[in-house]
Image (cartoon, rainbow, N blue to C red; front, side):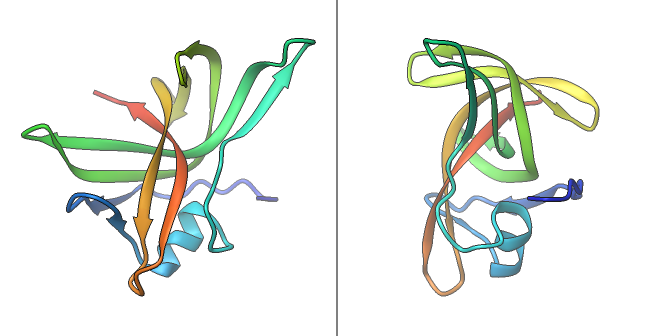
Length: 126
């Protein structure tokens, strides 16, 4: 991503399982090339401590213990990282407000049935 453009958030329905998304939306918010996406991690020092992580930022709205919608914010950075088991936790900025966030993954499905596993930063905005 050569230029930094802030996209308006995109909210999609979560029917359970993979989140349906159009190919245009996938290319705009997730990746121009249609492939699985991983976290971009910056590490420092002899022990390779993670200091910064970039990925697609998402937040969920919940209803009866299930995700009802997912909101995509575009690629963001997770800073002030702390290791917590298999995930990383830190702070992510959405609309110039810092929120707690953690790493995870989300499965997306294009209209033609192709599935893509995308590394995400889950934003805890509530």
